[in-house]
Length: 300
Image (tube, helix red, strand yellow):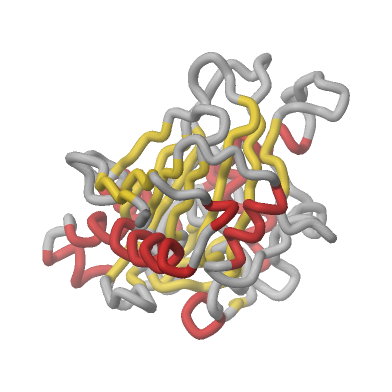
């Protein structure tokens, strides 16, 4: 039986895929999934209950795995410690989790941005903790012609240190998964999707400075683009059920976590697909200021 692909009604992205076993995916079923991924940019697979190994194996169909922690192809995004307790607000991992609540593209602060992200639910809180996705293909399409012309040839630096500073957290250079020793990656605001050819907004919380533009003007522009693009009908909110698997095209879809009661456990299994260097590798311009970025110093 071929997978059933049902577009999410009323939205510009997303489809629910049923009648498929991702742990035992034959070639025809895989081709249907791959086509749906490119068409809809985000896919929901309810009730898969994949093991970490099966999730990694499914991810490898899309490309090489981006290793998030040494020796691990899949990691848990979790506020739960090994002893079952939850993290406290002053712990580093807690601060990283709060950062995930801002709209972002994965690994754009690294030289090689990610191609795709996969999440599956292991433990979910009683309420809240959803994952939201925003379609930056339709986000670009929604812009007026004056704005499209203004941003066509602009680029922005991307930095984990700058994005964490925006929410009041300081990350010391070299202490976190990030890249800054040789400069922040510089990426165009408007990119071309390498497969579909569609124009896409490359924005999100990691962007912080535009060459040739004053910082206050750059931040205002970046904030306005993000605010305007991440709006209905371009946003999908996934309410997690244990066993669900969600995959999105990181080349054209922003994502963020939604808040929840942090005294409750939330555990998601994450797998990230590395981007193709031909389209996702960015030059790194020397900009040491990002590690000490202070948003409050900008006149807004």
